[in-house]
Image 1 (cartoon, each protein chain N blue to C red):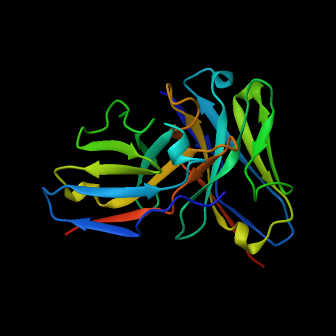
Image 2 (cartoon, chains in turn blue, cyan):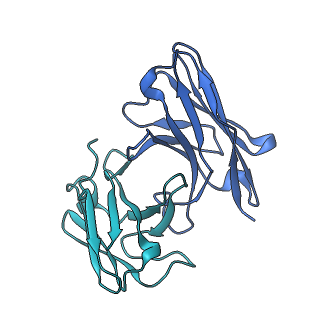
Image 3 (cartoon, rainbow over the protein chains, first blue to last red):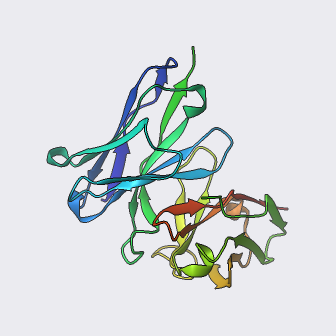
Amino acid sequence: QVQLVQSGSELKKPGASVKVSCKASGYTFTTYSMNWVRQAPGQGLEWMGWINTNTGNPTYAPGFTGRFVFSLDTSVSTAYLQISNLKADDTAVYYCARPAVGSKGNAFDIWGQGTMVTVSS
Amino acid sequence: QSALTQPASVSGSPGQSITISCTGTSSDVGGYNSVSWYQQYPGKAPKLMIYEVSNRPSGVSDRFSGSKSGNTASLTISGLQAEDEADYYCSSYTSSSTRVFGGGTKVTVL
């Protein structure tokens, strides 16, 4: 079945970096873009941006430029989110999400299970 | 890009219908038919309920319907059931080629 499986929870100190993985299965990885969504504890969803899985070209939402990097390893159908110079307010669950067919890339029907990143000294 | 505006909470009794609004601008909700709705239970990933304003993915109950008028989109849940108690988020494509979510609405079944 189509699924996205993300890496496990992370506990990091301020200033450190983290790399979250999102492994796709059940479909051709390069057929769909990959989006990233953040949800801070008790808060709503924030769209972070997306990466074109054909070209590797990333697009970042305002507020997610500089310290956030999307990347791919198409040989293993995996997308990555790397966050550098972590701050306490980066503490959140990070989701990868695949667009739904027929949604023009704007709605997401396949989601990873989420990766909790906790930043604390 | 500011988040779309949703009511913080909506409640209803079993069997009733409720409507959740999602207000944006002509640069997002009003400008495109790319509004989607998600249901999220605590500790779980969101689930797509509606896309392109009013389309239901396969497997989503027909008790869920979507519409749009001007800069405001709406999600209606008919025949409210206990299992519908969850958080609901709207999302829209924007003129900046980004996507934006609403702040979320907590639905309570009385």
